[in-house]
Image (cartoon, rainbow, N blue to C red):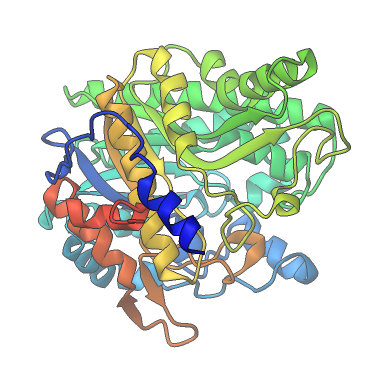
Length: 441
């Protein structure tokens, strides 16, 4: 034993080269960077009785974990919720207008509901919060669904008419417009995996829906700009795109490279390419990292089920992979348009995990901006715990906890982390402990 100690004592210290200077300043974001939060009308408002999802829940009780019902009653409590958003030091609020409220029946316009959303816009403005309004966030008016939903050839024209009404009503009051949220998710969830309405597994229908969504975005883009031109103002219009990052198990194998190229082209780029010239900025929703291995039987033939590898994941099985955000932004930067992160967040009831998630993803966003990518803002999903579609209320995304059924609101511990980042417009040094910065041997 003594001999071993002598050997250890006489061992030379390895030369590891110069030690990097330990920096304590915050990771600062550009002046004017917009920190925000996001919600969607159907998921938070409650009692959207004229929407297709309302009827879907009623007709398919085994397909959803819970009915939306009152959701979190944001419809009546938005003033309280916006006060809390302001306490988080956020300066951007992304919310959606429920098409079915504005046009509950074909050729019918509900003035009361137009006034309601106008009041929401004013409530944001008096709190110094900029607005980003989404025209379509997954739910349709039931009357549109009965005509075939997005498969109906007249859907794009109907959406254009709705966009004209809303754009004329709120011209000059909206800072950013989003026409459609995640068009490829609409195609996938409704017509390929068929877990959302209309639950129709059909490739031809999926392609028709895809083409109609392209037409709808183009028509709405023009309608919003035309309404603004009549008032002599300019507007910024885009769409919220669900981006995935990809990695392969054998980068030198042709099949891996081909599948990676195909998935990237179809999921990330096809819609943007097909609507070129109709984006003033790019909205990016980032949640998913996919691992591709065509050599084994996988999900959809090539996608690895990350549960097999015990990867870090959210409560609903989405992999936590911060570096993927950098990759997705680097890829989208080729369009040479400003980018706003319109959604990014985690479903978890572990607040340490949410805090780590927020810091680690925003740190990758910092590196992306440092690399020259033009990112103007970031919206955490979600401001509030909400109705998460077929998952009911089981997925906890919010910075604000909403207890069911009392609907009592309270900040989660991770909200303090995000509020500090927003206040300081950067990641303070002390928050880097969430990504292991203070870890020592």
